[in-house]
Amino acid sequence: MRGCLVGMKTVLGIDLGTQSIKLVFYDFETKEVVASSSADLEVHRDDSGTAEQNVDDWLSALESCFSNVPQPIKTSLVAIGVSGQQHGFVALDAHDRPLYSVKLWCDTATQAEVDEITDNFGGRARLIEVAGNPLLTGYTAPKIVWLRKNYPSAYERLTHILLPHDYLNFVLTGEKVMERGDASGTGMLNVREREWSKEVLCAMDSERDLSACLPKLVSPDQFIGATTSRAAEDYGIPRGVPVSCGGGDNMMGAIGTGNVVPGVLTMSLGTSGCLYAYSDTPIVDPKGNIAAFCSSTGGWLPLVCTMNCTLSTELMRAPLGVDLSEFENVVSAAKPGCDGVISLPFFSGERTPNIPNARGSILGLTAENCNTANLLRAQMESSIYALKFGLDEMISIGVEANEIILTGGGSNSAVWRQIVSDICQLEVAVLDQGEGAAFGAALQSLWVLFRTLGQDVSIADITTEHLTKDLSSHTKPDESCRKIYNESYLYYKKAIHHISPFYSSI
Image (tube, rainbow, N blue to C red; front, side):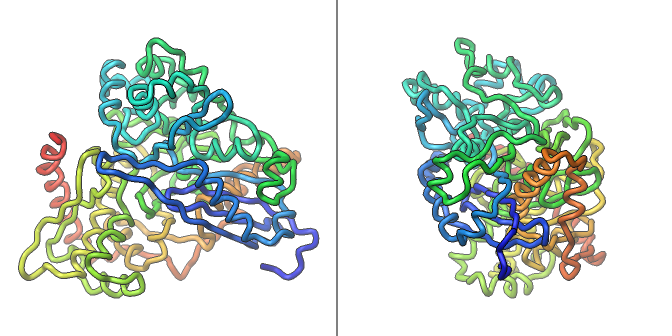
């Protein structure tokens, strides 16, 4: 933090993640992050696949984050942007009170509702044809039907349907709106037309007009409102600070990694894994393997997401007795391909491939290759194989792929970076600016601020000006690994083919 704060102007990015809330205060004149803060969140899970959080815990964590930031920096705020975990269902009544816990993106307890909506609509292929996407168990739409079936009295009182970042926008501004990027992940948006699909809503409930519960869709280049007196009092920030629409964490991560023009790929290695690209036109995968999402910048963001990425390595470290400080050295001891050990790291079920009831499996073990290094590295490699599948699918439907910008916790690991580069056969870059989603939200608010002040700037102008690459982390593919990874990737796909029917029958 710089010594003299007089006259400083900052934009704030807030990222409501699954495991934590993060704040990033960015001085856009000096191009310096002057403060950051985070607070952990807990996910409530059970054996049914349920994964939930409470909005009160979000707000307590947000208050804790703000309390750790010096008051002069909070006073310097001139704009705010909010990023949030996608697909979560925030159900509010007419008095804006939560009707139920928030069912999260990683909640897999709604497959029956996915099947019900899909059947009502006329099948998966017709969903893709009409709305642009099939329904998946992580999406918001089946969660709404789940509430109707399991808590009918709460469903009757349902007045407002929001996503996690929309709820924080409401807390800050009092406004209930949604932008089209995050709205894409509800399963209720026609992504080509960028409007709510009346047909999907009817398939969810033919007797109720759910559109009355949905917020107004807003453009990404305008402020949605400003901080209220209540928000100013609760968080120690000025009243009247303008707030941009924000977006889902992937959409904000795209901005935070400069993924706002064709040719750039962003891969996020967090609890989940994501790979996405920018397009000026809608890209709909007729097979439904690639999510046809909108961006939060006015374009589209074809995306593939897995539910298990660094989650798998974290879960395996404990029983193997490997401390985080030892992790890099341990996995470096294993050879590419792990001597034939393959993991299907589906600890939370899986979305790519779409097997919600799947569980983690390890294959190919022998007396010679069963060791800690191989078991841990296999989690890493197999996590990237799932994203490699998405990369191949994207290229097949016309997505440009020149390089990968890596973000998320895994990007800090030299081993992760090399594995990504070797498996995907692309150069990998990491940016100097960390916290892609939070920083992206801050940059979106800066873009809107400049446009509001009459400056004719594009979001690409903003990212070019404020993002730089960490040249020390640049990674190129090792050609000597190509053959072994090609073989291991085929083995991984063969394993999925044989094990999928087992979990599909559960």
